[in-house]
Length: 468
Image (cartoon, rainbow, N blue to C red; front, side, top):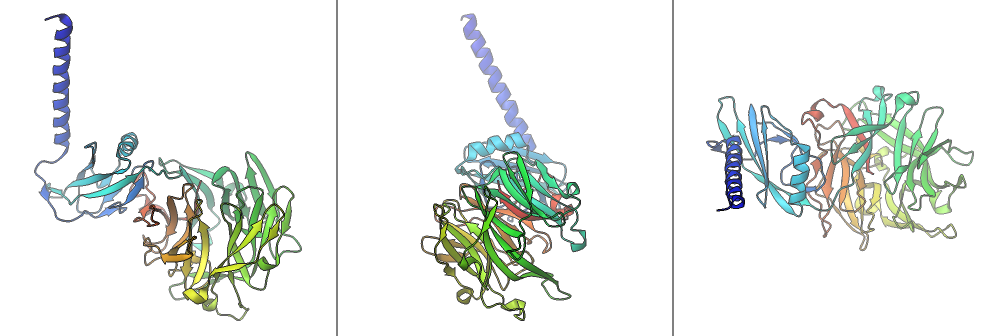
């Protein structure tokens, strides 16, 4: 036998020994005498039986059952595994291993098995579940405002961006740099982080527009409009912005399930030409009705909005209900068509708010509540989806008994996010859901955090989250 053959035999033997040791180490990480339980573990967040994108950050969680330590095994259909051993109830998945595991699992399922040791030092094995991984990526970032839930503490706020592929979160602008001004309505053109706007509401009030490194500040109030510009939507070409102009009133309630309510005494819609620094409107968008919340279609041919007719100063808040409309727009000559009502409050019995269109032009998601349009304070607010080819709509299965409100579509129209107060009824948190080829929405899952205890101590709202 020659020397080369001997080396091959020795190397093969070493590989077998190492493989055997590795299998033994893996087995040693998994309790061999655990008592099988016929129930799922109580975990937070609830990451059971969900659909996730291939590029989502690790779904770290906490075991709420009586556990002193735990072992969690993630196994895909190819028998690839991640084994996480924890000396507490918190399960933190290594980022690099998770990324590799999801890449191998794309288009398939993975199983989650939890072994927990109780105070009596006995190991139990809970009923396992499966999650599905899709290759349809989610946009890498979201942007949102952090603001206190207490109204007297509103003066500390900031606009932030969060990387969904990791846990990195950084400020875009903090209001300690703007003399504690109220900053809001951060809006991006086609999700481009280099082209955005936001408002400053206290003096010196105005709008900031950032475009590829250049930032301009201007006051959109004119003697011809009732207010400065409020709720914005970028035209997909990036040279026009539709705004509402509103006279906004806010009421605080001493009792009942509604903490406060926001309503308009008057509102219209205008269009701002970024290059010409000029505001224009049309008769159908500036009537005695309350037109607000404009949003362009992604081909730029239509402007969608909501409108309430017949509201007077003496009209009770509970009678103020909005319809969903759209109006055609011809950008080549700047002409408008006639307003068309797509869905009326008379038909639904409810008030429509926050229409948002999918970039592929197939769907429109909107809120409906008992009355008004400012749904973040309304526990009656739920999310609905409309198929734009048929104008048929239905209630989404992602709703809870608490507030479901502001939402945003991913750039590939496969994911949407929304805010919900379902965790505690007080704070708005970000949830994600997948839309399959038939338009069916998956079970929503909470924005993951590095520390599974993050939401226990975090006392700030996630306000107006959008994909970028």
